Length: 260
Image (tube, rainbow, N blue to C red; front, side):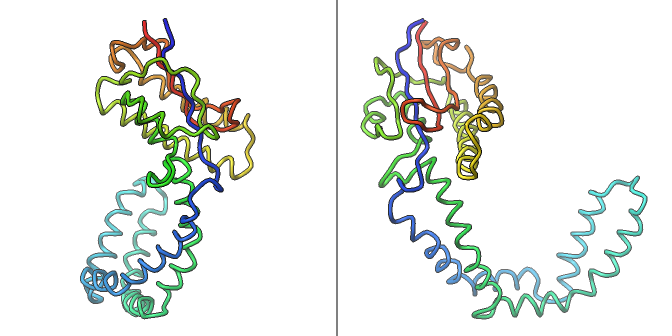
């Protein structure tokens, strides 16, 4: 076995995102509020009156709940009876409250304003993993380029602050089929999202290793075998792992390619 490529892609710190990310919340708020009338029109089209409320919301909800609740539940009949009696009585309140909520300055707009910070924070977590390709690349697109064997393109966007290029002899396409790559990248994206949330919440490296890396790495490893990996590579010596890099001090994903 000969290692031909090894690289670790680290997640970005919040302060490394482009300054434009500060506009995310305001842009989302402006865009959503501008669609207030359209959203209200669509809701009104689906539930125009109290009769439609009973058909679309009450009856469908009860049908779904009846399938959900166990037939052996001791209070099943009682619960369903209450729902069938009480829910239709709320039809007029639903229509009135919905209409009021979508007036200018109503609860819809207030809710959007109240939620914009949380929305922006969630987007920033995503950007710390995928980046903004117009300004900064995150670990996921770099991994994608690496798995496709695009050595020159990949190395042109590496950053020594959060990436660690260890071995750079040759880079080959990793998987034999696109769907294998897609599945692995999706799993890594999911894990790194949790990693960023965990780092921000103050969990230490030991906790992240035990609760995230040690749980996801076996799932990733199971997708790397002789049937999925390029025949020019050694599946036993090639790997993709969630880990923290000692050089950059960052959590991220490490790719190793080795030939037989």
